[in-house]
Length: 478
Image (cartoon, rainbow, N blue to C red; front, side, top):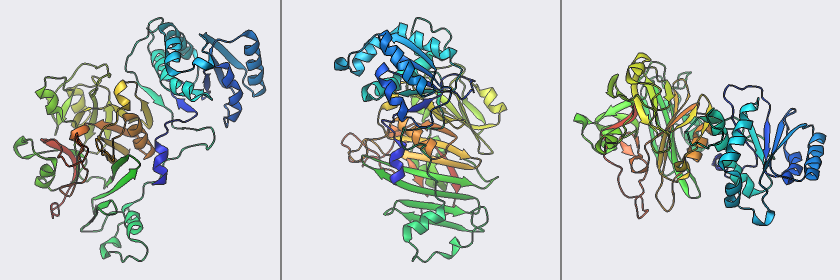
C-alpha cells in the first residue's frame, strides 16, 4: 500500500508534457517563470544535453546576461526571454500571475513559440510553489493553443489531446515506476501467510495461470481480497485505502478465445439494481457502464451506442469536451480489444465495420496508446465516486471503482484517476459514469459502498438496465 501514495503527485517539481504532435527529436524545452529560477536548474538530474530554455518574466539586461552565463556553464546555450510583465515577490500569487501572464496576447505568443519548438516535451521548473502551481495549468493551455493553428491573438478553449510522456521526475528521486500487480495466488498467500494450508485446487494450475478444471472462489472482506479462477478466467479484486480515499481494483485476465468483456442486460430491459442483473446472468464480475438511458430521458446528447453488434444510437458530431460526459467512445470487440475515440470520430457504420460488439459513450479518455491524456476541463479536479476500465495488454484488463461522497472517502479527481490507471499498467483507460451510478459486482454481490448526502455510505446505486461484465458461473449468488 505504501507505493499507492506515489500515484497522486500533487506537487512534483518537474513534469514532462507532450506538446507538439509528431515531433520526435527528444530534446527538451525548459520553461521557467522568472530569471530567479535559473539558479535552481543545477538541481535537475540528467539535464538534456541540447535543451532550450524559455524565461517568461521580463528582466533587466544585466539579469538576462547573468542568467545566460549561468545557463551556458550548465551546457544550455539556447535561451530566449518572453518578456512577460514582471511580478514582484511581495505580490506573488496565482491570481496576479493569471492577470499578467494569462492574457490572450501572452498565451498566443507562447503558443506560437511552442509551435516552433522541435521537441516532444515541455519541462517546466520553478523554486516557487506558487509559480509551479500556476504553470501546471498555464502551460497546458499554451500547449493546447499550439495545436490550434488559428490561435494567434485570441485564446481559445478547444478540448485537444495533449499527452503526458511516460516519465515523471521529481528532481530528486528519479523515475516513478509502476508497481507490479500480484497474481491471484500471491494475493492469497500474502493474505493467509506461509503457515496457511493451501486448498488443493491452488496446486492444479495450468502454465498460463488458469485452473486445469473447476472453479475457485475466494471472498475475504476482512482482508479486502476477492478472487475467482477457472480454466478460462482469473480475477483478483483488492481493496485499497489511504487517508481520505478508498477504492477497489479488479485485475482481470481471460484465456484467449474465452468470453470477453461485454454489455449484459437485465431481464426484459427493466431498470433494476445492478446486483440483480449480475445474479440473473450468473455474472462473475460486473461494473456500471455509460448509463446512456439517463441522457435519453433528459433529451441530452447520447453519443454513439452499439450493443451486441446493433446500433442503438448513432452519432456524427464532435463535442467541445468541456462538459461531462464528453461522449468519447470505448469500442469492445469479440477478441476483447479496446478502441478509444473522441466523440464524432466514428459513426455506427464505421464501428460495425471495425468489428464492434459494444460501443459505450461517456469518457473522457484517460490513457490512450500508453500515454496519459492531460485533461484541460474544469470538471477534472472535482472529487467524486468514479468507475474506470482499462486494458493492460491482450486479454488483460483493470477495472477500478472509487468510493466517494463519504466522510471516510470523498472520492477521486479525474486527474488522479488517470494517474492510477496509468501507473497500474493500462495502455488504454476510459472513464465510465460515476457518482451514484458506480457499482462493482462480484459473484452477484455489490462490494463498494455508495455515498449519499449524509456521507454514511448506506444508499444503493441507481437502478440500471445493463452493466459491463465478464465471466459466467453457476456459483454466482451462493
